[in-house]
Amino acid sequence: MAVVADLTDEDALVPVLAGRDAVVCALGAAGNRQARDHPVTGPALRALVPAMERAGVTRVSAVSAAPLGPDSAGDGLLLRAVLYPLLRRALRDLYADLAVMEDTLRASGLRWTVVRPPRLLDRPHTGRYRRALDANVPGGKVIARADVADALLSTLTAPSTEHHALAVAA
Image 1 (cartoon, rainbow, N blue to C red):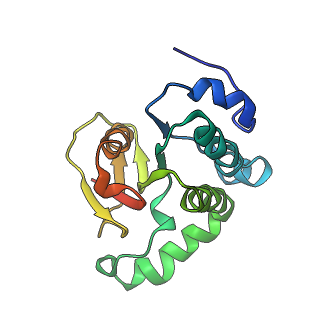
Image 2 (tube, rainbow, N blue to C red):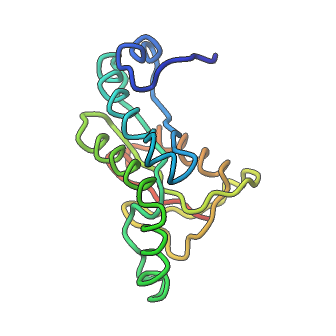
């Protein structure tokens, strides 16, 4: 069932959420410029969280991005000291929008999980990907979008991921 609603309007979201068991949030800006001019995830989550609470929905799994997680010591000095900082600077508005989303979830009373993938690829689902709880996957550079979807859904029934960030990578 498709529903059209303003994702920044809490009152519009409550009836959409009523009777649901969980929310999977895969929102995101199309790029850094859009995130700067029209942030998506932060404003949407500021409405979604109270709407979920009003509708009695307590479980949410949301996609974020690996650069919001800690650097992995296994990634080497060049990546950690040069390439990652350049990437974070180039996409700073996009990551700032995602950081607002993560902060909003952390401050909520919801049972949340944030899934942090690296660069997304249009490849088929494999079901074979590495995971790291509250850390980034060492050497994790890419993952299929379909595997991120798999991870988002699998966290909904995994209490061990509640109130954590789950990094995923091929």
